[in-house]
Amino acid sequence: MKKIVLFNHKGGVSKTTSTFYLGWMVAELGYKVLLVDADPQCNLTALFLGEEFDSYYDNPDTCEQNIKDGVKPAFTGAPKPIEAVACKNSPRNPNLYLLAGHMNLSEYEANLTFAFTASQAMMTLQSLPGSFNDLIEKTANAIDIDYVFIDLNPGLSTINQDFFLISDAFIIPTNPDTFSLMAIKSLSQILPRWVSWKNNNISEYVHSAYPLPVGIPKFIGTLPQRFNIRNGVPTKPFRVKIDELQNIVDNILIPELQKAGMLFSPDQYNQAGINSSCKLSEIKDFQGLAPKSLGVNVPVFALTDEELETKGAALEAQRSNREVFREIYSTVANMIIELLR
Image (cartoon, rainbow, N blue to C red; front, side):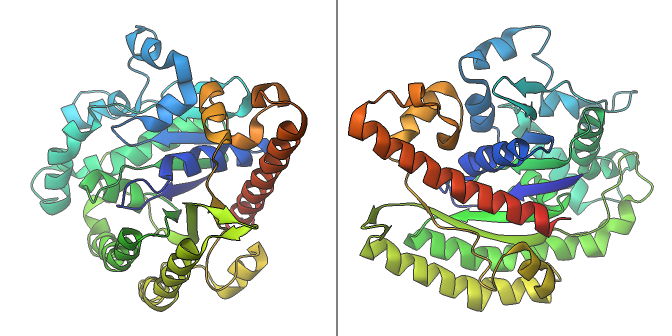
């Protein structure tokens, strides 16, 4: 089983959409996939559950089947181990499952931060950083999961740091705008710093009830998206920003990740079809397909002709657009699978 985290501390870069779409596509390709909603906003859970969202948390049978209650024994010192959480299965994609989020997950932030900074204080605190990994692994193993995709909130919290450090690999979704350029520069310093913390402190957690997993996350690539196109290419303002973004990735981010040991080998990238720029694809704005996919809780490439709700030339145009996105996400999904073999 491989754990992939999608992270950027800038908001509005389609982290949740990317998690849902890539997880869905990998599941379509025949692998069992678990989506993990580690964002207290629970947007991934809402996207997955749709109209069932409120009833999921109201129903006594499912209200505690979520990530916060799953690690509750570790954070409350309960005399029982963490157990696998029952996960919702997608009615349209039988290989896709959800470990639901919880809006109060951030309540654990203070204790987790203390555990990261004062690990020798109490043995119980030493169990906290590894508790999320234990929950994910037990839950995934219970349903024979092949890939886990984790969605994080846009911030630099200790919870985000924890999920990042328990993953095997990471993807950085981004936008072609000024703040995204600033975010990539920032991540080039922050992510290696997080990994350095793990390398220097993992021995402190070896004997805890929930040890941190060995290994550090490695960079799969970036996903620039949500830009407009004209004549099949990004419009000029977006093209300029995409190029500026790639320049920062090439000259700042990748060198810093390489120094921290956070890259796969050149042969591995090449075998997966990922070039030296580590740009997995450029994903244009979904435009008219977006509201239709949200209405039925499937990716734009999984919309049926009936769900497109158009006829004639408009239907043909939307069919063509749908297939463009299918090809993009299929290609990226296969890159991920090949890279993580």
